[in-house]
Image (tube, rainbow, N blue to C red):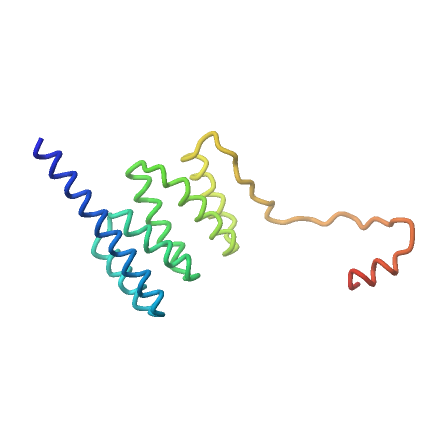
Length: 154
């Protein structure tokens, strides 16, 4: 019984610390100290390398600021969530797929989409466009073309 009470207390303390971290970094952002907030988050990640809540806060912060370190941070977070079997892994894998597509990495995007589908079996699948699209032949249509060409800027 004491063990359960101790584990609950540790869990509550961990969540409170993570919320404190999120609040501190938000306040730093509001004050225009994004660099300092980034440093605090990276230090927190170093201090708690297996805490998915800290990694989530760090990944979302980096993502929000367009930092290239967001992708590897999300990768580490996804690995932690897959180890614990968390339901959040589907959301993280999907976000990673989007970041991969934005970076032009089709192969990594496909890998993360597969992980998203595996974590979220039975849901509507996100479909990737083909890597290379080929334009079909030009078709001629009847009627005045100059007016349409002028409107389209050709």
